[in-house]
Length: 102
Figure 1 (cartoon, rainbow, N blue to C red):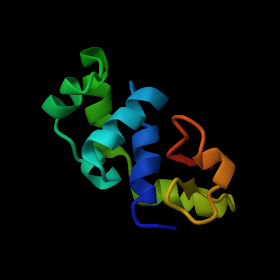
Figure 2 (cartoon, rainbow, N blue to C red):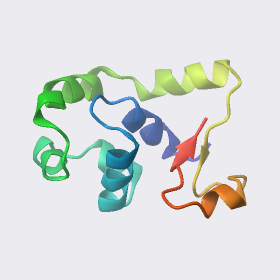
Figure 3 (cartoon, helix red, strand yellow):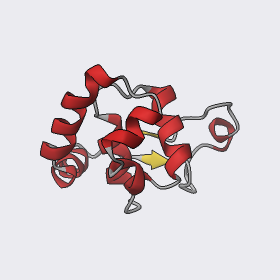
């Protein structure tokens, strides 16, 4: 799996970040790791609801990306990101295609 997959998975688990916000954050930062490490101020500027911020910051602080990836591997699940050569070509062409899926 590409190195940035763990950050995609982590971002998807944060409270207050739905699919539209997820795409907006990734588009803004360009790289999943940069998005994962974004400051509170940056996230608020991108429209993350302030009421979710304490939960989001706590989740990001305590969530083990390595442990989440181990769970995925143990289950035998494959994570495909938009840049993965095996990502379905037709899905890639859909407006607002998912950045990744499991």
